[in-house]
Amino acid sequence: EIVLTQSPGTLSLSPGERATLSCRVSQSVSSSYLAWFQQKPGQAPRLLIYGASSRATGIPDRFSGSGSGTDFTLTISRLEPEDFAVYYCQQYGSSPTVTFGGGTKVEIK
Amino acid sequence: QVHLQESGPGLVKPSETLSLTCTVSGGSISSYFWSWIRQPPGKGLEWIGFISYSGSTKYNPSLNSRVTISVDTSKSHFSLKVNSVTAADTAVYYCARGQSSSWPARFDYWGRGTLVTVSS
Image (cartoon, rainbow over all chains, first blue to last red; front, side, top):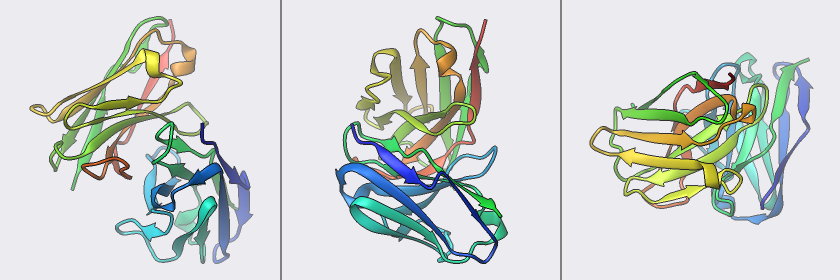
């Protein structure tokens, strides 16, 4: 079973700062099938990045994804007030087909 | 704009069957994959399974024996059943679209989610 480990668990930053979120996968996965989601309280997850580095429709270019193999990164270049949320990575190509990481909470410092 | 809406009972008794439906509007249910994901209160996301528009399914092995997902293209909806529920099945249940006619498919549209509580 593939396990996705996100770090840190919580990231305390100020608006305007850069956020770097990590997702480590227990075995190599195709970068084509690695996604990132944003979730705000009481809302459904929102697709930000797919294929490790492609932005979903309507996602601002301050969000970027990178990585390959077992190490992937989501970067928010300059945090806006609406970016404070929980972020999940997800793989959707390998057994057991779909798995999510445990999440990283980006909170206001 | 594609819209997904979950519906079903918000309270289910232990050992009974949880049943939810996801209605798709603003787009065709054909040529895509349709998935269920759940999130226990205060916890992370867990994928339950998916069904293709043609009816082929795949489930999370941790739930496989208790889960059934079906699709009714004529009504533009798909459904989830989870048997023999316990308190551990209490969660917000989301439906989502897999944006492709073949797997793997990224989850591009999600419903707002519905809270199901398992309690007597």
